[in-house]
Image (cartoon, rainbow, N blue to C red):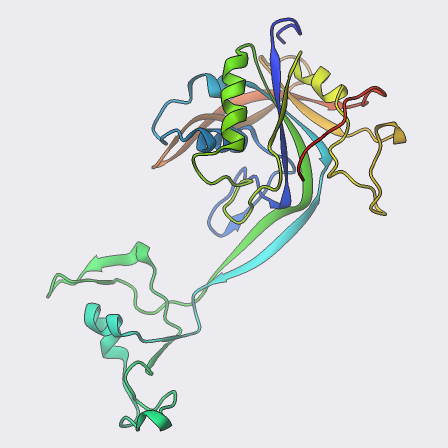
Length: 299
């Protein structure tokens, strides 16, 4: 690892009600890692900087990545359904899709507006049972050329989504170019795009960039107190001297003995899908120094 006299670390606080850092997510089951991934955090920084998806990440992908789990959080499972059920037929459905219009079969003649009721046959009251049309299945009608749903009837889709609830992590980005770290720190507090902790349902809370310090990642983690978000079971702050030794995962620039492989090294975030490569990291129990620096941040 680069010597302490020639490298700096940008410290980033990642905390919020929910976080989700997928590793092998698919549509039906979207998992989360037990801590932020390098790909997810670099993507967060790229969004803050306003980088286009197709633009090379350059030095941003070259930083050494570390994360300290001050408050690991708890796993939360969301049983999620999409579509299904009964859907009102809107006027535009009748105009743009003859397949939907053909399925709208009013059962009675329209009643006066004061007596209008579901199932009466009044315009806009007809319903399609168990219908769900997804934009992924839009196609051109062979007769009219109008855009229609290629699949008029579909049962509800079931997905399983996992989150980390009430977690707080201290992330470190190590690089010898302090100007790069300063640009990223400024962007995190003045982002050009909306920022998420892994997914759009997970906005961050409070300050993100919480300082740039000299030295390697391990030193930065050992010389900074636990985040104020890290609290004990009774709600009291977990002081550095209370015997709390959080886990930290620190990137190794090469596959050294004891380093584990992880496939979350970002290559690009193209619109047609992200690409990742392997990297290596080591796990450490962090003993926070008695003279560790405290925090003056917005939660």
